[in-house]
Length: 307
Image 1: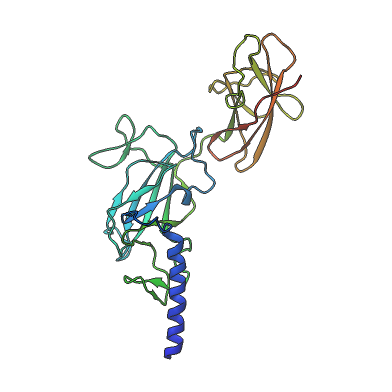
Image 2: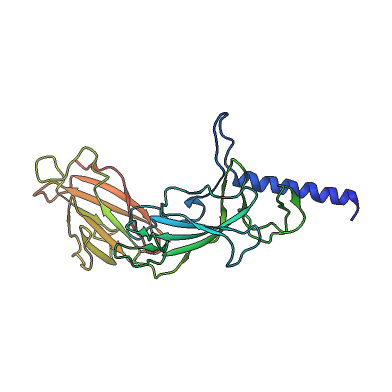
């Protein structure tokens, strides 16, 4: 290869490397700010369409295992595991070595009542029994899959011809984010897919009760003016019952509807009543996108007076 061609390839590789590093490093901090060297795993990079929420069956906490792949990936690769982290926060690893490369294995759980065993470092429940993750994935460091045939960075941060090395590069006094996560794999059978409907977030200044001006009960209407067909859970979080069409629920209760299809959007109209009245006084519309194995709380508009 002549010098001109080699220089051209080297310039291209440097450009690609710079772009990848720009994607994975945090923005430049304000002058005077001291940034520690850290590799960070953020839920937004591996959750996909799954919501991090308090909804039944939704992800709530995760653990990340950071693996040093500077010398390749095998059983002897150095590893460090985070504690349990809320899926609304990131896992920060500051015990990394600048100039080394890292990937991350993710374990995700739909419950928040777990702990880490001090002796085994396993994830356990209140009884001490080990709990397997519901979802797992691996994040390889960049937004491009391994083996794209572009130049990676060597230990001097310079580009070289060949495939991109897996793992994100740890820089001194910089936060580097592990991206490039594979789709989540579910290790256990999903629970029921459904929606929870209630007036809790629609009341505004109104209150539940049977006194004058208060909301006593509500009914969920289908397209034909009746309760939606399909699996209907009971009020107040109980399940296994099928209310008669047109059944009403106390203002403070909730209705769970199951049997929804993952990824589809649903709309429900609710009407609310005063005590001892047959005609509804208020109405609202609730919307939700169903997610597999999650009982999602619908987003409802504020109650509006009908008359």
